[in-house]
Length: 481
Image 1 (cartoon, helix red, strand yellow):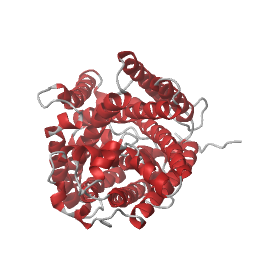
Image 2 (tube, rainbow, N blue to C red):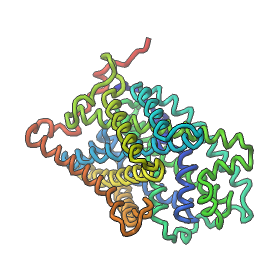
Image 3 (cartoon, one colour):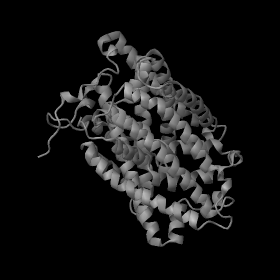
Image 4 (cartoon, one colour):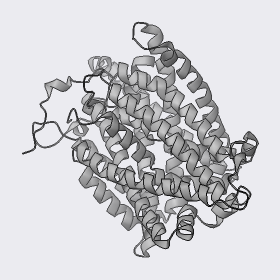
């Protein structure tokens, strides 16, 4: 792959784009207020963001110690063993694919509603076509497109925050938004799950490690710096946005307002500024979903590429470009697009609701999978650095942060599991919601089975798991004439 192309700033931009601030503002925050009635949502964004950041500290240290384009796969393999590493790789592929495919349902539903033209699956297919074109291009092109849309997203979100605070409802700016008592609601599990999903993105930037431009610094330093900066940025942005929405409507009215208007932030901008601003916000929302799709696609490609290179996955996925110079993972890109098209087609044939079914279920599957992987990565960091005392990392990074991150991460995961039915809009007596953790367990078992098969029949490949990273200097820089 193309080397020296992803700086710390690019990693920050890619991570923020994957998280999609506009989608979180218009979709996640509104849905959380409507579904949970938690008036202390800004506080929850701080708390969940802090847990994610603690987990990212150990994860980033492992990225520096074990640079690999399939980070969860390699980190787990070095910390807990090759077989758990392959299992983690399979779970990562399932989780990232689920998150990306969920956005096709959301994009299709929004575009069909806005235009009044064609079914949702038509627009989902159009999005797949766009991702197909950009997914086989070098990451530099994607970053340029992504950065432009990200700037527009932050402008709209920032404008909404200013409007919310300068034109609050009759109660003024609600200081109770940070009162823990506001989290004592039946829908806390839903609120935690949706808040967690908002922070999906920064950790995926480690997949671009072979394309990193670290300058004169340590390998992995630019990527890890970009990831941590992205996480802190998202905490500030989402906390402010949730607080501004509560200020704009009033703490006592925010749940009802969100339930009555799924596009509440855009309505606020239209009413308090001008309808054109609301329309512009809708356009930015659509573009933000597209760029988030591209970012997820690039992460998935690199996981499949790296695991294929080590012969854990089929060799077709290892194909890059058409020449001898470094490029993007073409084989993995094509396979991912085919998978997305098949899933969208199945949901379309079944007549499933693209938002209530495809988006809700797939995004829950992805968020739960990535939280599980972050917890496992934290445990891997604890064991790896305990066996490598001369790593050069500080104890806060190798012990304290991962330990607290794992403990609090498990608490969040248990909260999600206990309220899966509410999260997915199912009856409390239904067993169907438990298909989500069952799929994650099935992916892990499939990975473990694959590792066991390699250990038995191809021990040399098994022994090379997580060690197949080539020297970036063995591949020439690409020169575009």
